[in-house]
Image (cartoon, rainbow, N blue to C red; front, side):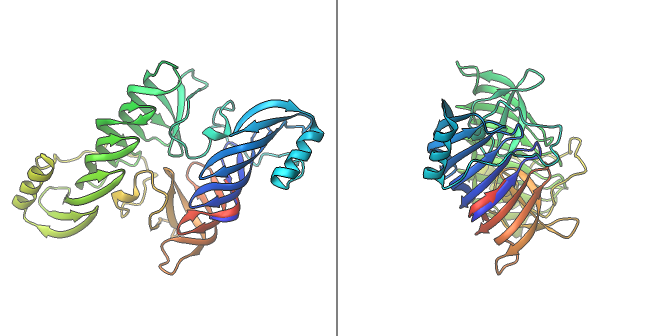
Length: 355
């Protein structure tokens, strides 16, 4: 949340501009690793209206409409449009800072680069279709709609982070009665999905062996739930995703049957967890696709936050609780991406931020 924030991808792409409530909002510049640049205005994360696209050598320009490149125009016309619409000059030539080899496919437009989970796929170097869900790119095996570009039906996503999802899709979003999302650190969610969010009964199995039963509405745990220890000998009630008082195992078994129609959970065996585990003290509510939860202390002593599926370390200002970002700061993510700008109420919010 700031007037000027920078978010930089590990492949060399970069966004600089205004943010509000964690979304691009206002004038923004997207610089591609191939040297091209785009000027656009955003409303709640979406490019709207007129924009300008510039070639890497700044000798060719095109108009843009709602984020899509349109007709070629003279450089003089592009310069005038940039001044009139964005109060910006012709962009300087962009030099990529240490791009990684794990680049996102270059043919993907910017609208598919930032925090989306419902854009058309692109063909990866291995010939498989690639999609980005909540900041995490991955390869897809499964069924498509009639266009062949959007997921629809049963399928599996394997992400660059090591996470994976098995289940079904409707209109390119996670949507089924029983889908499994598995994190590379061993944590796992199994349950109902709707429109890309947890919705209905779900089970969260932690890498430490504990388990939680909850009901979700549009991604949030609501009402009563049950927490189980790794050996299934201790249980607690839960309320809106938070662990509460300890109860007898017999009471927990009865509650699980009554509320969720589920038995005592089987002991959970982690499947090949990686060493890059997300801090175990983070509750499940902070595990899935959130960008507005309290931070946790990482092994290096720095506060860690998860923005759109990507965990990272934070250097910057906090609110009075010391757990939420508020003011100027920088996030460096495990993916190699980073953001420089400001935050309001733990969200990207500024007039000029770079991702």
